[in-house]
Amino acid sequence: MIPVVIPPKRTRASPWDISSLPPLPPLPPIPVDKDPVPPLDLALLHDLPSLELRARYLMDGFLMGMHRSPQKGFSVEFAEYRPYQLGDDLRRIDWRLYGRTDRMNVKQYEQETQLRVFLVLDTSASMAFASRPEAWLRKIDFARTMLAAVGLLALRQCDAFGLAVIGSDLDDYLKPKASKSHWQTALGRMDSMQTGGATGLAKGLSTLAELLPRRSLVVIASDFYEESVALNAALRRLRFDRQEIIAFHTLDPVEIDLSEDWNGTFIDSETGQKLILDAVAVRRGYVNRFQTFLSQTQTSFLDHAGDYSLLRTDGNPMTALGNYLGRRERLC
Image: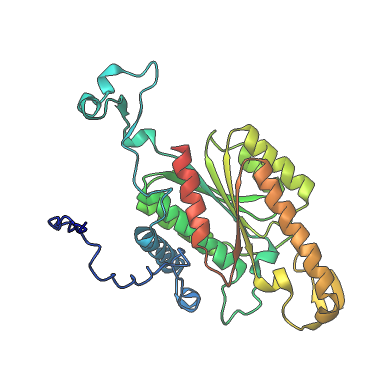
């Protein structure tokens, strides 16, 4: 028998068949911003001649970084709606939005999202320290700048903000308002206050608690060189009155790591106590004790449902501003 060979059936190539096409070259890697925090020129911040300019520089850089960042979680815009709750006036439901989304939302007006923000500045003698005054701001100036920037953010959002200056007790108090002239007044008050004396932060916060309206947002800039028992008692009082608390723990880098090879007489700026020390010899023990102090301070605020940010005067404070806006949005 003669074998019959049946040729393979030809099929018409599909125009979508890409198996015969050469492989595509690999795509270049997508650049990823490893540091979502916007940059900050500390030398420029140090050299700016006024508190207002430093605050504006901080706020403008922070908002620019927010607009560039792909991360979500907080915004500088007001919420225009909130979900309907039993008892809300039916006339305030946006029925057109309900028709598009099948969800009932109530129009929320600006005054319903307004907060009262209180800026608390510690002016005790230890806040005057700067290990490199030619390069970094003093702690008090860094704290003033941070609080002034928070005040400017509050003004942008039409939040009423007040000021409390605490030295040995509550030394100055400014009632909350929401106006540019009020911000300028707060700047003048902060700029004119001199550092001096032993810390009375806990006592000042307890005095302030008598004046604060409930459900305010209290932003404290301090080095928190205060007895932990007294500080915790003041924080408990604030929390009992349903105040929201944010701590800006403002420190010079040398206070944290004792990186300078200093030796000689060290003088406590608040008590006048003198110690003869060799920084190299005591550095390890000092750093361990200071880390314990930082951990205890952070725990104090977290235990009272507060937020905590460590601010080094040689570092970028933008994350702390983000913490403020995140807490502010959760409250609204």
